[in-house]
Length: 168
View 1 (cartoon, rainbow, N blue to C red):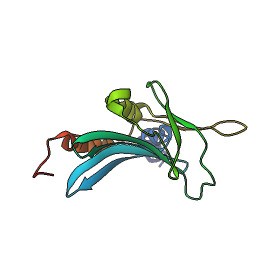
View 2 (cartoon, one colour):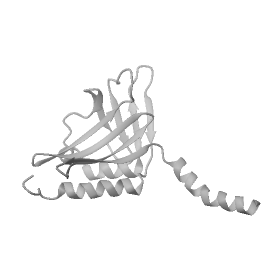
View 3 (spheres, helix red, strand yellow):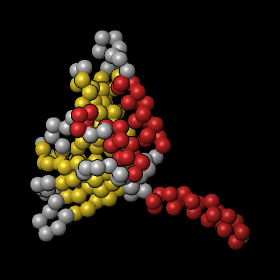
View 4 (tube, rainbow, N blue to C red):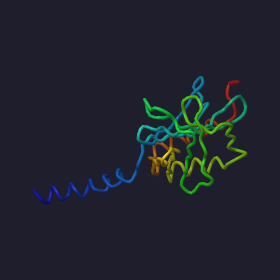
């Protein structure tokens, strides 16, 4: 009996360690229009905060969105926050906008390397730092994102980058 229990413990131990090593829940974001992707990105949820990075088609142009949605019932957004992505510099400064934290006027292709930002978000994680009087609140999340999330994002991004279909 001890041998069986020891064998089961050995088989489950690696998966327990893997779950403990990842802080936050990653998921792919796919925004469709008539069945075709109009926005592709990823999000990580941690302690009620939802951090999203999305690339989207606006007409014939590509744009990017970096936003953080607060937990339900959050009393007030901080005046200033920053999103620090592992091995990506500089940090992304966020300001309150329409009930969320956002990077207004973000044009990723001109200001930052979009591919590096997304890759590092998925693989290295980072931290959301909320500026508060009396001391910052630091909310860390770790990578890598699960393979199904990265696969869904890459599949969507490939369709998003493809030429328009059927005049859409």
